[in-house]
Length: 316
Ligand SMILES: Cc1ncc(COP(=O)(O)O)c(C=O)c1O
Image (cartoon, rainbow, N blue to C red; front, side, top):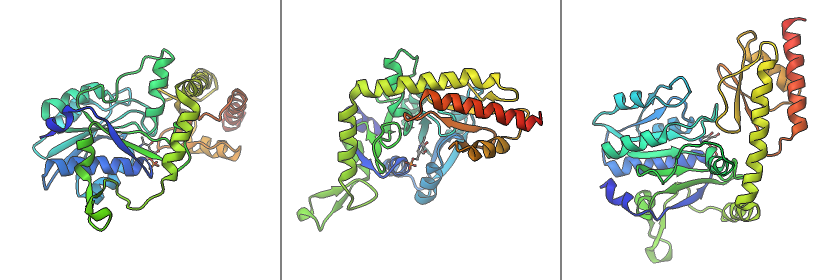
């Protein structure tokens, strides 16, 4: 059944309200395809909370696979969690907390072997990884080039630089896209289908996302990613030189984790926010996302402020 829907690679999708709706649509499609009443989907513990919301809404049991030492999903643990109720697997290409890319190639092999739906959440990384590759960075495959990938979330309103709201969901084939479609009998003599969760919606986000992509083009995105990565790598090199500060892992994209074995991260976060820095706080680290509006002087000022915070927290 799944094989038929994957054989054609006539990729097709929707602009939706955001990554949350895109991930919900993918989970809905996986559930509808399986026709199982009690179904389970395996996600990495690093998956975005939109999967918890989707599972709750759809009555799916979410099984959380642990991470390996590089913060990627541990494929052996995914394998261990497979059972007769499993209908799908999720991999992330650019995790919310660290920008890590799961081993999607291995997940694809697993999905093909077990006839499971594989969804890739590239909400953030989808507009980063292809351009990193053009710049010569070694990046792993995460998209429809892999035979098991059924759908991919890729949000124009994140690194695609389109105005909010513009999430994106791509299905491997037109047929797969229509699995969760509903016939709307009262419109166009009953020929209208809606395959998104919301009904009537604005076409403005589609036009805006299209206009930004046309304006930037491939070269525009490559230029943006080039600077984001240069500044991310600079932060990754300079932060550990500051007393008490370190990074969680070498960055896979323009997301960096700042940690400390000397100071409480919430104290560092409070000080950084007091100085006007919009950083995110996770249980054991601070996330720094180097977005396209960030310039060299911001990075210099950030490092200076972090140095001051270190001095202050040391009571020096
Ligand atoms: C990996 C990932 N997926 C999904 C989402 C949800 O996206 P949205 O806030 O557009 O619904 C996020 C949000 O940060 C995310 O990082």
